[in-house]
Image (cartoon, rainbow, N blue to C red):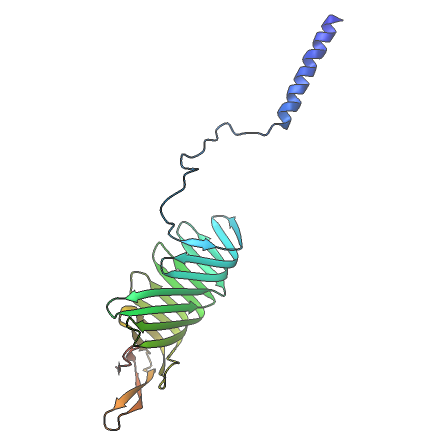
Length: 246
């Protein structure tokens, strides 16, 4: 009888230990938190991105809702975007808009530029900016003394540029116009190179159809008269309204 009692106690103890272990959470024995897990970094992040929802899969993060990405002088907003960390790029696909504000010290001008398109792509690693399909770029330039303000609107099928270059290249059904003022200018071509630091628009066409319609002062009448510049290449200064054709 005593042996049966001891056997029962041993069996009961084994069952109790088994049930207790089954209810305990499993903790990985090799889990060691990183040394900086609870360290708050003091340096400012390179970019700040906000969104309503975030989904990560296969190294690609999908952002949806009110997406807003801020980096230095750039503010990108859209309703949907994809983000990759290596290489670092972001692709905005639903109602994207990119706003950039910068000061051009050489010209003493503050420039505000807004880009809208169906797709806007930014890559930090190589500094690439590209936009495609129904591209609309609005450029406002105001002198530091607030004496002069100009607005230029450029539309095209595609846009490409790089951070380390002053050149923005528009291609496919390019049009340029200045909607403000008493004497608005307009133009068109197959390609437009916009030299940001010099406020120069270079329209080109292999068929010689590059065109700028602008205005110049007639010294005899002291009145502004319309002037058309046409050729394979037309160079136009959006600040001074001066232009030449080749």
